[in-house]
Image (cartoon, rainbow, N blue to C red; front, side, top):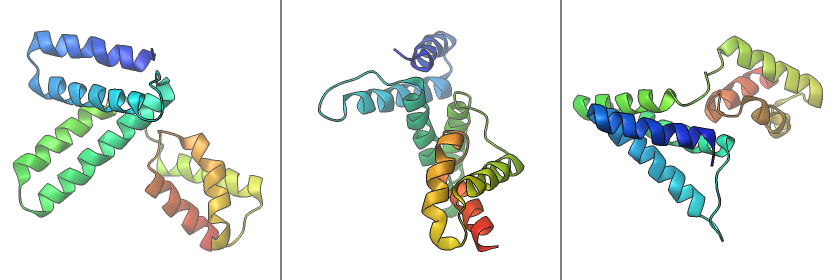
Length: 151
């Protein structure tokens, strides 16, 4: 079993004993998403820490998008609840890259691939994604790659 999943289970117990409803519900949701991912496909398997990070990243993104939707609909309480859950999930994710760090990685990937022009975006994304896995959202990476290639 992955160390991250073990940590989530341990934190679930702590949250239960502390009666911390927000953490409890968020960690339960995260563990449920991990379990769904483990049984998806032809046969059940144990997820690695990297795969658990991907699941948690996806869940955090869902919370951010839901908060935005609730905010746009004028439902501030629900939006805040989603943001609170996202904050709990982000405690288990690796630190996000700054724009400067991300730009540097994109520049290195462009140099490695020898890419030029917007049509080479796929090449650069393929080279940079493994380097930023879990530390930057795909849309953010794509925007920087697009800007660098069109400049």
